Length: 211
Image (cartoon, rainbow, N blue to C red; front, side, top):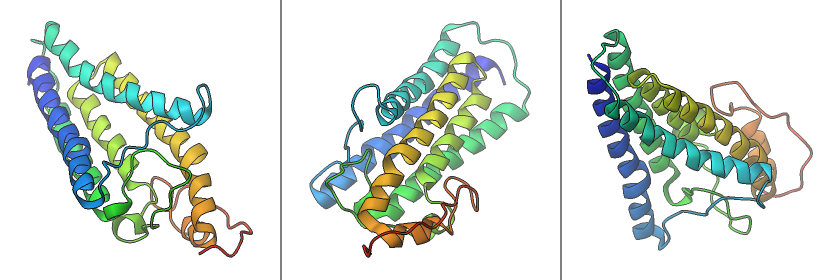
């Protein structure tokens, strides 16, 4: 497969995937709860949480730009056949994983954190395997994109996303969940990995009597 053809496949997959996991899911969330689920970038400008949000936006933009730039370039050179094939499978699996995780969250699904808002702690389904399956699946989808479009832009998108989710989870979401759900969250996090099974489990810490 030529680089140009692989880039076209990547662009179509990326646009369709984003339309489903961001567009359709937000529309569905609004229908169910009256709000789209977007909570914006957390933290003051320059803080770690703020940088996590900025890098996430950068990753989304770079991931879209990568196949477009490839299409504008001379894309007649061929890729090893295994790269676009594996890239296609991994990208589709990644977006499917994002959607499955979002659906499992139900009404608790959000993009960003509102410190004054309390949602149910979801620990079933894919959340019984890893604590942040949405982010894991997003990284998987962009890893597939890198195989379809092996370029500096796609690599930067993947690096930005990995950094963003690390900052978002460690600096923003985990402290929030500890505060909101107390012992229930710390016990869950002590047994379930952060992004991959059994890796990144938190040590139990003394907390209040919050459920």
